Length: 496
Ligand SMILES: Cc1ncc(COP(=O)(O)O)c(C=O)c1O
Image (tube, rainbow, N blue to C red; front, side, top):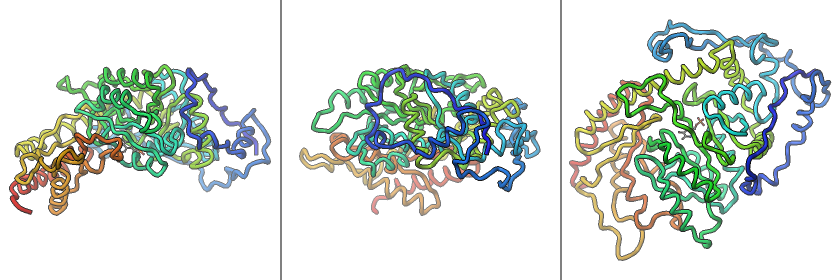
């Protein structure tokens, strides 16, 4: 087979040596030797390879792939697309040998762990467009779940302590537990993780607690589940703490493009996006994890990690020996879409700004409904989220006739209230009435007692529910009507 593929991106110098953060698993991992040989076939054009068992493209049962995508010529492309099945579209075509941004011949072949160079280049430009990172490299992933768990493997040693939001996205925090990573929760408020609390944990860390935390995993925009967004000021403070305490920040940001504006009546298309941790990073200590799940479709299973060059090399090596690069179909679609044949970066930007306007509209619709159906009962309240897809609903559990706050005996630790029990009952009542919500207990950071606040344990702060405004108006109408009704019945109950 003769190879003429695009060369890989060149590697920048790493600003600071952060290799002491790498896990022993990462250090012990040997590069996949077959991939090393495979890469040599890209050393110069027209190399003759008898080395690899790559099926020849003439045997792929595919000649052409067409994707019909929305046109971004409209002023508000998402609204036109959503409301009118005949709204203008654009067809992206990939053929075996082009002309196209990524041919079937290349797109469907085996590739580098970082992704096909064409896709990697297109996504690097996207990352540069929004974050202008210094000296970082982009590795493609199968979405953020894959990206984050790869970062955990890269950095996490059995017995290590990682910091995270006290209510965290449990899909991934749970994934770290069997690896022997212990979570240390950091207190939050409506503005997300509180920098002073992070500082407290680090300053008061005692040697008998084990190795000092060296990684912070956080979701800065529309945090899942609390919907909170870190202000620029908090981001700067957290980054300064990361420098002071030598922390790596894993910035999980799938809701980056869904940022709203609570200060102006109407969100404008040009409202800026908040600066990411990546854009503040001068040391190379931010690993930013992005996904197409929320702006394209979750089933695409495509995302990317932007990291310093040393971490990049290890991520690629891990990927080469595990999942390998993401599927060619998604990479082809994204590469075509971001090319001059498709939307280009400007068109992508127009789409995501139009998408955030749509979610902003849904958020406002949801807040109105919430106020009418649930807030009006006086039994629950919420704050307007500045990003993302979730409302964090505070249930006024202290109004329940069976609420107790005197359960702790003597100076023993543990919960003082029966909040956890009452919230479990409320959850069951919702289910009985046909409504599923996410209880806060699902997201309570899975920390052991050594690392949780014994004075103010999380069990006493579980009186929250996560609800989403990602669905249709009909679903929201029905859901909030049930929630309001169930709350009224539940709070009227004297005895179970
Ligand atoms: C905070 C957070 N991280 C990661 C993910 C997973 O994203 P992906 O579909 O890219 O794996 C989600 C999805 O809901 C999320 O909310």
